[in-house]
Length: 463
Image 1 (cartoon, rainbow, N blue to C red):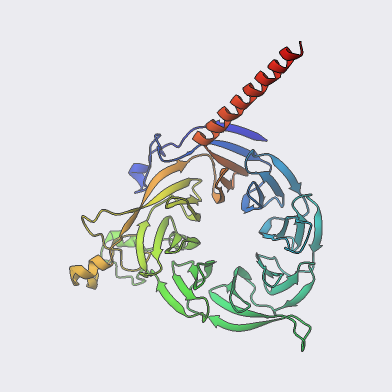
Image 2 (image 1 turned 180 degrees about the vertical axis):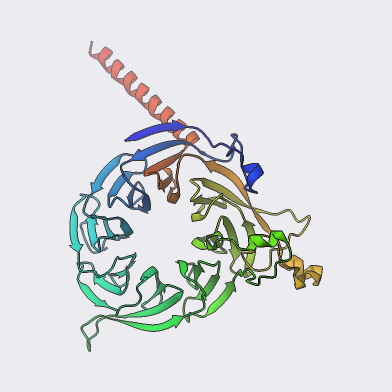
C-alpha cells in the first residue's frame, strides 16, 4: 500500500533546551528530499535493505518476510514467504558470467535456523538448508572462489548449489557477529571481543576436499566487536562496544592505528559534573562505519566522527548528531553523509572545511564526548601541538527527514531514485528529490499532451 506525502523537515520541539542537538528549521534549502512514498508490507520491525540492481531492492525483518520493491515507483513486486521466525542476515549472490540465464539470487538466514536461496526475478524458493545447530547471524559471498560462508556458532563454507564444503568446530555460544573477506583466501570473523583469521583451502590435485583453517586470533579489543568493514586494499577497521576503533593492515593483520576512549573508573570524582562520566556503554559504542579514499566515518553512540586514515586522527566530529544511538551511516555525493538513529530521525550532513580563525583541539582520546573531567597534563604543551590535534573540518546539518515514528534501522541510496529507509515502525519510506520528481511529472504531462495532439491530428486527416 502506497501513500504519497509532500513536505520538508521540522525542528524537533523542545530539544534546544534539553540537549546540544543541532537543529534545522523548515527551510531546508540544501535538502532535496521533499517528497516521500510510504511503503507498507511488513508486520514487524524492518531491519534489512539490500540493493538488487539499479531499480530494485529487497527488505526483510522480524516478520520473516522478504519483499522485493521497485525503487522508482515504490511498487511491491514480490513477497517471499519461507521463514517462520525473524530474518537475521541477507545478501545477494551475483550471477555467473558464464551463465546465460542472469537470475538475481539472494540468501536469507533466519532465527528458525534455516537459510533460503531465492530467485528474485520469479520469487521462487530455489533451495532451503535446515541443518544448522544455531542461528546464522551473517552471510558473506566470496565471488572469486564462487563460495559463500555462513556464520553462527561455527563457520560453514558452501558452494552455489548449497552443498556444505567444510566447517569449523564450535567457536562460541555468542556466535560470529560479523564477517568480511580479505586477501590470500582469508576471512576475518568477529567473535565476541576477538577477531579470528581463517584461511580457505581450495581443492588441489593432492586433495579434492575444501578445508578451512584457523590462522590467528587478534585480541586487541577489550569488549565485544560490533562493527567490522573493509576500508580499502590496505586496511580493514573494527569498532567495539566501548568505543575502540582499530585500523588493521589487511595483509599481515597488524594494528596500523588505534583510538580508544576510557572513562576513569576511579571513585575520586572532584565535581558533580564528573559523575556524568558514568554513561551507558551505548553512548560510545561503534555500531557502523562507512569510508572513502581518505576517511573512515564512524557512528559512535549518538555522534558521528570523521577519522583521517593518513593523518591517523579525527578531523571532524558531531558529538550529538542524534538524540539516541546512531545505527547506520553512509556517504552521499558532494561530501555529504546520511545517518539514522534509534530516535527515529534521518539526518543529512555536509563535510566542510573549518575556518582557520581559531584552532579547536580534539578531546584527548578519540571519543571523549563529554568535554570535562580531570585536568589534562597535556594542556601545558606548546600551542603547536594543540594545532596539530585540531579538527580541520566540521559536519554541518543540511537536512532532517521526519517520517518514521520509531527507530530507523538502515537505509539505501539510489542515484536516480532517492533514499530508502526502514524502521521499527514496520514501514519503509522512499524519499524523493522533489525538484526532480516535479520535473519528471511535467515531462510526462507534456509527452501525454503531445501524444493526444498527434492523435487528434491523425483523426482530422482521416476525415
